[in-house]
Length: 189
Image (cartoon, rainbow, N blue to C red):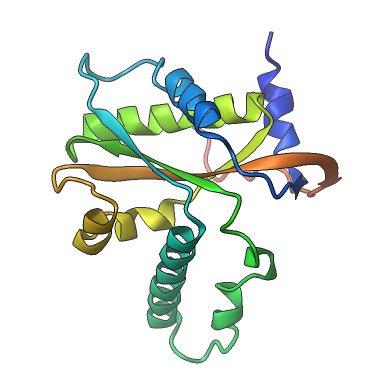
């Protein structure tokens, strides 16, 4: 039996990431596992976009960083001089060559479709962790991937909506504890 609590707690650890590409068969296995969840409707209205090309990932994250920086600068004003450093972390050096971005898409922007896509993303994360891969939702990429420019570049039809972009990475054996504070409950009625 899979120890889900152990998998979740293991995610607290800073991972030793390997410079190893995830092969196509492994990604297809993860997608097959991910779609076997409960759906809000009986229709299979999801699709996937896979990006493994390092140059494409680099350009995508550069675009996202610029958008995030602009949004935060607008919210905080120009007085925060540390903003550029926040969006260019050192660990992104070499980030793009060994990752896979899997975008869970819906064939409409309907809220039931969105719910199904998030459930598929959850299943994908669980399946990835069970296979020893690190995964993480990169929700800030969804608005970028939904632009006409990126849809054209990635051959995504105009009626398709990207709901949940995730990054997958191969994890090494060395882990260090990343401490967490206790959960803060702000209301319980």
